[in-house]
Image 1 (spheres, helix red, strand yellow):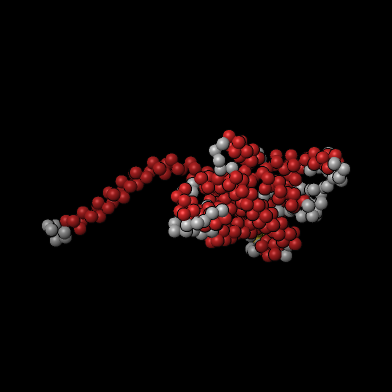
Image 2: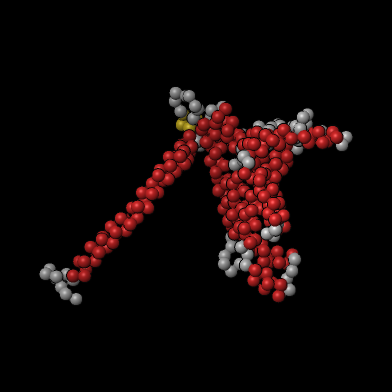
Length: 313
């Protein structure tokens, strides 16, 4: 190793320069990527991150639209939620809606995917029929089903009268309104679940079934020990997406029942809309939004915990 005039090794003095030059080349190499990503990052920052930060700020104020001064209240909005019977009712309705909707969609979606795996023209046609409601907006679906279930002029009431029955107010009965909305939600989205699970079923290697059959497994044992473990990542994806969508349901409920009758279908997002855009209590509505966010976060973490898997499963 040669020494410099001042006694320091040449390699020791050159190494920092090489590191600096390497860092500069890396920055120049990544600059193009950052420039391409800049418009998307700007949109995310303005329309997603900033509103999220602002909503938390609003939740700490008695923020009323049009007021000359917004009063700081700290956590009072959250404390008020704990004593609000309408909030607890909406929370219960939302949880019941989410649990039943997700469970039924996963079960029925798996059944449909299992029955329609064949690549025949009939199976493809039936899959298309199942999937068609998925592409229609929830508000449109809600309007159609509200008309169909109308006890006076609806198609269901007409068929009931034809067979000598008495029309039922499906959306007017406090005991039937929520199950009816859940049915419509499941009917609309089961095709989406079917497509996701069908892709998962087709991705299971055939040799796993062959090995299981050699070991004497068949029927239910194949489903339990091969199909379901192999579908765990797909079930996790479908379950999380359905759960998040179900906990945030609004348009279907708003169009079909507006939260009635007697608040039996009043979800958290419906309450949030009412507080924020009808009563203009933005602070209280923001507190509801953050509680819902924490519920979704907790539900997602629970699903990740229950459905965790690894390569040796």
